[in-house]
Image (cartoon, rainbow, N blue to C red; front, side, top):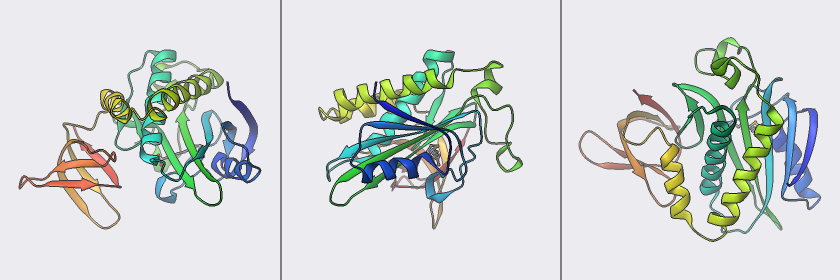
Length: 239
Ligand code: BTN
C-alpha cells in the first residue's frame, strides 16, 4: 500500500499533494476528512465537508503522459471499489462523473504539473456518508449512505480505489494497453448510446454519444449525421 497522508482538514488535497511534489515525493496518497476549498473541474467549488472521501494520488509523470487515461483509470477504480463494498452498480458519465440513478456521487480532477520534474495529481471525490447536501446541489448529488441507508467505511473505500488504480496503472497504462483501459471504461460508462446535450465553454450541442476516440474525446453524432469531437465540457444525458 502506498504511503497515505491523512489530515483532518485541508484547503484541498490537490494543494497538499502539489506541496508534497515540491519536496520530491510521489506515489503517495493525500486524504482529508474535510476540505475548505475543494475544487472540481473548471475551477468549480466542490462541496467537501465531513463524511466524504476526498483524496489525491500524486504520481511522477513523463512529459508524454496522457492525463485523460489516468482520469479514466481513476473512474474505473472508483466504480469497482463501490461495487465491491456495496454491490451498487454505479456508472461513469463522460468524462469523469460517478453517477447513480442520474445523481452525482463523485468526480475526478486530474491535474498535471509540468516543469523540471513532472507530476500528476489525481483528485478523487466521493460522497460516502453524507445524509444531505446544500441547496445548490441537493437535486443533483447523492451519497452511498443516502442510497443504501447505511454507513460505509471511508478508509476501506479509499484503499480499494488506490489498489484498483495502481493495478490498472501498472498493468495497463505502463504496459501501454490503452485499448484495454478504454474497454473497461466503456463497460462502466452510462453515456455511450444515449442522446445527450453537451455544454462546452462556448456552445451547447445536441446529439447521440456514439463512442470515444483514442484520446478519450467523446464522439457525438449530430442530427445531420456529422460526427463532432468533444474534448471538454459537461454533458446532460437525455434518458
Ligand atoms: C469534478 O467532478 O468536477 C471533480 C471533483 C474532484 C473533487 C476531488 S475531492 C479530492 C480532490 N481535492 C479537490 O479539491 N478536488 C478533488
